[in-house]
Image (cartoon, rainbow, N blue to C red):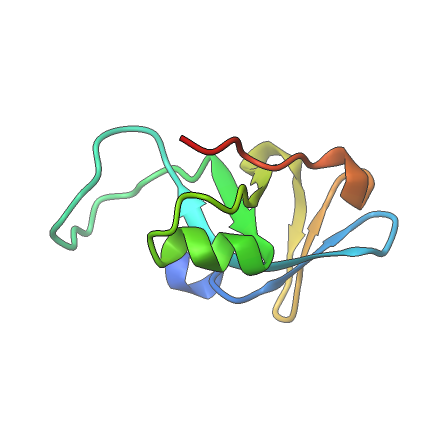
Amino acid sequence: MTPRRLTQLQDLPVVAEDGRRLGRVFEMRSPGAAETEPTRDARLVDCLLCGRRGLFERLGWKQPHPRAVPWSAVIEVGERQLRVRGRADDYETLEGP
């Protein structure tokens, strides 16, 4: 499946090649200024924030250091999960402010 909308990625489980879960996609990052109004323009995704800490980041809590998965690591976007290269331990958490 090739996602056409960012909402298709939200809440998908993220699984590494070693079979371990990294959590669900709760937040996506893209380069450029934040947009406050919905647009129909294409926007590149460069990072996914996964797991419970990604949810906290989405809710505005900057403290928890969510696990970050670069979009370049995505192997497959399926209907039920998103697979990424390597092992779960390969993905570090983002540093807080």
